[in-house]
Image (cartoon, rainbow, N blue to C red; front, side, top):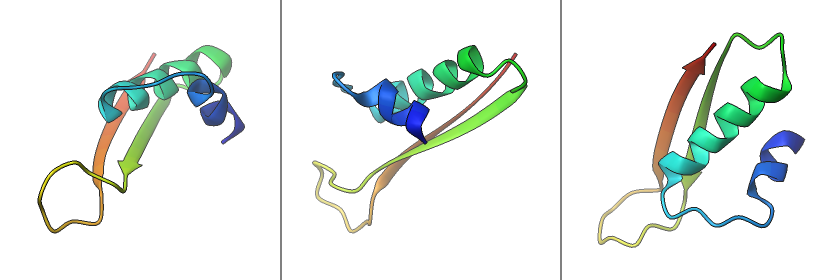
Length: 63
């Protein structure tokens, strides 16, 4: 979780898909033993008129 926070500090992402991609890439770069990683980013406040708890983006990356 600490690695995820470091990826976010000082950055602004326009898309939650991009945020998930950056986190997944960071994990694979920092942890040599990681072969595959799945990251799900949830955004609770969405700028559209709908009945939903959140929007989410999930990416899976492997070496």
